Length: 277
Image 1 (cartoon, rainbow, N blue to C red):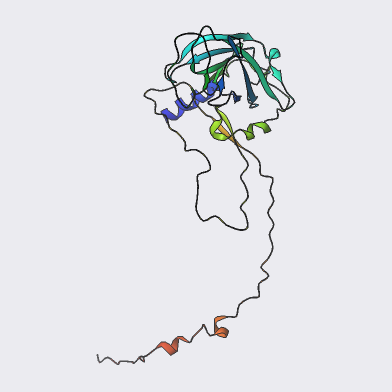
Image 2: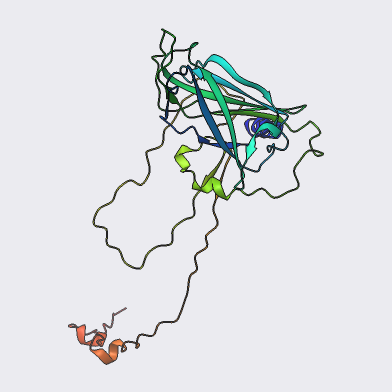
């Protein structure tokens, strides 16, 4: 019971909101244009719709980072305290912001970008882009560390703070989130695609894995944040029809030769024995 109460208090103290990062994609490569020393990287993400949304965020900061997930090394701040009004939003509710990396200060290698969002008086959220590669950088020292996954997001928003006046009232379209492969999503609220209805005919003769295998991370100590809180499954737009069975009823066993009289199977007759007292 004590463990349950502690867990409940932890959940009550934090709200986990998310963005789903769409770009840069995993293993993307960026290089300066001919004659240039800097490289531009466009960031793209989707608002999941849970608090805090982009409307609640006070400012965003973008930091270039490298190294293992357990020991993140900041390389340099790319943009600091950017208001949401400076972020581009398209008709599909996708958000875009372009950062510039100075190629004279870093070497070639694998990097990722931290997106740090602050909500005044409530807390902050931290997300990381997938790892990408920078080539054609001018610094002599290269970054040799590589990995396949980015650090997990860290989100801590204190709900004890009065946030009711800033909570959004408009409905946010999150349909674009379902187009992002589940295993590529990094937010704590993730979106699963619509379940496909079964077909009427099976033609496959062997099975194959549709998605990459999952991964597990073991921690040696308690954490004050969660990697994932919930999964939102897309509604099913299919339809099912039902009808009664049009097949002619089969004959009863007694009419089709499948029934027999149990007496026909008796080979011994029952005899009455009178016991003498």
